[in-house]
Image 1 (cartoon, rainbow, N blue to C red):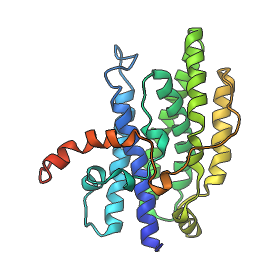
Image 2 (image 1 turned 120 degrees about the vertical axis):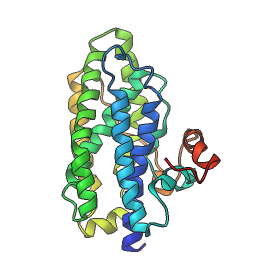
Image 3 (image 1 turned 60 degrees about the vertical axis):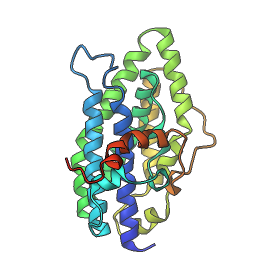
Image 4 (image 1 turned 90 degrees about the vertical axis):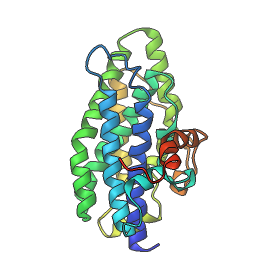
Length: 252
């Protein structure tokens, strides 16, 4: 793998995570339990879409501008997406959204903090701009963890179930692929094993505070670094890519 190929895949991976997470969250814009007030889920979804656009645009630059960021987002098969599998899982319940957002945003806070010091100026700039957003995403999920734990007993039980069911998808956050190792030597990427220690400390502090049990270590889901996904990604892409594939020359 060349240096350019490594940066391309790394930027693509960061963009895909934000893109799929943003689209999943957007499905709940009409269901947010605080819709009578200002809803945060649409804003968090938009933050993710903005990050996706920035990272995918950088990927097109590395590739030589043969494609646009829109083409990367809406004209790839599932096997060419590298997002974490947790981002593509359905959100049938608000507790699942919060558990998922807690895991993802805690990871992104530490990841973007480190990436803001990357020797790649573009990645560092995107991470620095996105850091304020992901910090708020973490605050939002921590707040709702506390609120749900203080509410009905059934909410606490559902929250614990969501934490337990999603935990085994978090191992992918910290897998070091070929591009990670190559770029780490150049100071572009970060050591995900070090991020894992920070992430676990942060998440454990939240779960302990709200009296939720920390799941025991076990086998973790894997595969996204190689384009392997759950059965849920293809339907997401079908919806996402419908207009672009139906009207390939349309511009907006």
